[in-house]
Structure formats: C-alpha cells, structure tokens
Length: 424
Image (cartoon, rainbow, N blue to C red; front, side, top):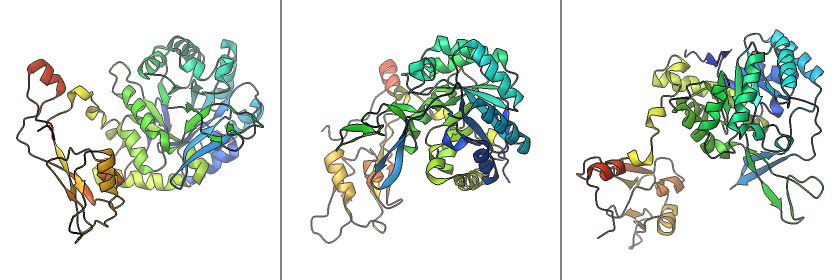
C-alpha cells in the first residue's frame, strides 16, 4: 500500500488532501466531518477582525451543461467571532491530533498579527497560512492581495509572522500578478516555511442581462470577485510549476486551484506540490469527494511504482522548459481509428474552420470516416481535442529524416529546420 503521509513545510498529515481556507472550513463541526470523511488536513477559514458579509455572494459559469465549471465569490473572511473560532480549533485539534489544522490569518497591524498568531498557536494550530491573496473587499482595506502584490510588504509581514510563530508559516500568494516568482521569493526572504497558491483570480463571473447588473447581485450593484473552480487549474499549474522550477526558491508548495479529482491531484504533485488544497469541488459535491481522490492517487502510485509521495513530487518539472528549447523538427500527424469513428465530422469542421484544412469527408459517400491529408497535417491536436470518442484520434510521430533542432540552436548554431508544410 503506498504511503500518502505528507510533510508540507513542517506541517504533517496522513494524506496530502486538505480543505482550503473557505466556506467548507468555516467551523469545527464542518472540519471534523471532513476529517471523518478522509481529509488529511484543513486550513481554517481566514480569521481577522470582525466583518459583515453580503447577500448574495456566489456566482458560477456553466459550460455546455457542466454546472459550476468556473466559480466566483464576493465573500470575505470569517464573520464568526474569534472566541468561537479559537474554541472550535482547540476542540478539533484535541479530537484529531494526527490531522493538520492550519489557521489562516489576515489582519493589518504588527500587534494584531502578534496577538492572533499567539492565540492560534495556543488553540493548537499545527501551522499558519498568511492570506495575502483575497482579491476583493479586504484588499480595499490594505490587506489580502494588496499585500500579495507588493513583494516588499509581503516580505515584511511574513517576517513578523515568522518572528512571532513557533509553528510553520505558509504564505498564500495571489495569482493577480504578471510573474509569481518575485512574490514567492519575497515570502522566502521573509522566512516562510512554504507557500500556498493560487488564491482566487480577480474576475466578473457574468451579467444579469435583464436587470443589467453584474452577478452575483447585491440589490442593484455588484463587484469583482474571486474566480476559482476547475476552470482555473491551468493557471494554478503554471504558477506552481514556475516556483517549483525556480532554483532560488526551493520551498515546499501547497497547491490550490481547480483540483476536482485524483488526476488533478497527481498533476499538482508532479509539478511540485507537497499538499493539495480543495475548495470548490467540495462546495459543489461535498466532503466525500476525497474518497475517490485518495483511491485514485493510491492506484496511480501503485501502477507507477511510487511507494511514497516524495518520490513523485516535482517529477514533471524537468520537462517544463522555454519555447526556444523545443524541438522544431519533431513531427506528428493525426490518425483516425476507423473502427472507433462514429462519423460525427466534428474533426472535419474544426480542422477546416480552425486549423489547417487537412481532414476531409470521403467524396464518394461510402463511409462517414474522414480522411487525413498527412502532407498538410501539422499535428496541432485540435481534431483530437474535439473528438467525442476516446482514443479514436491519436497523434503519431513521423520520422521526417531531420535531426532535432531548437529555435535557440537554429539562431546560435545555424542548425537546419524542416520545411513548413504547405510552403511549396
């Protein structure tokens, strides 16, 4: 049986699956039910000075019948008293000593940070997460992403927290920046034991086209919110990987952003995450989603020969390179499995209107299986992407007789590039 035990910056848990700091981690009763369902840890919904939330506060985008493919919120930090939260943190940690209980914090002054850090540790927190990412409401008050977007401020407040804390400190980074690396390095300079990313992306989820008001609507007004859910996974993966491959960084990463199943979890681990935080999928499906995540991860580890998580963390990072290092002479073409093809011609339409016009219907009408003009196919993958049948279209490597050559090698060494298709 593979060992799912994880250590993220000194915070340990029986498996890497943690609830992210959000509504599913708003109370002791919720987190205890989550632990019973199989979650290895939880990051408590952010504590700070008392706030008043709005109604309504959630929005979603639905894509071709998929509910909540993207999710948005204009909710702020906890609106429950600090006294109640700390009492529930103490009770939860006492009942579940082997699970990770991380407390998320967001306040303004150095004294407030000191006071809340002490109270969090006294309540039994295994670690702290500094919320430098909230993109709405709190940033207008000088907190959240207002801190996360300024490396100097990030570093300074992180150094306060590390000074006051006797437990590991994670810094939750905002994705609302052009390059995540300087912000991760700022957290490292401040003494952080690790980082969490990504927080939500500043967004407008939609518009009520009858009332002419942004969603989610609060009376006749709304505002930008934080975007999350499955749709943000590619952005999260890029930012996680960008830090994981940065030689000057070298801190543990708690990966967040669009994790909805075991495959997503594996991708985050392979790109350098040592713990995995989930929010939106729990909000949409409930705590029991972790059962399939655990089963899927264990099966993946078994079939790929991994006995421990640390054997797979970051294993895909060496493949993350710059465009100029890609082999321009590597060539693939599309192949259609006639036995699997259902004749829908989605590939024909996509190729003719959106790609390179190399897939054609058979002119005599004797078959619905399209034909591919391999002399024109550039291996773009679009046909495979739109095909509704698994493995009906595959991309097959072609031996074109040209030695590997990158753009950088072509410029610096004059290495030859194969002729472009259709150039004749």
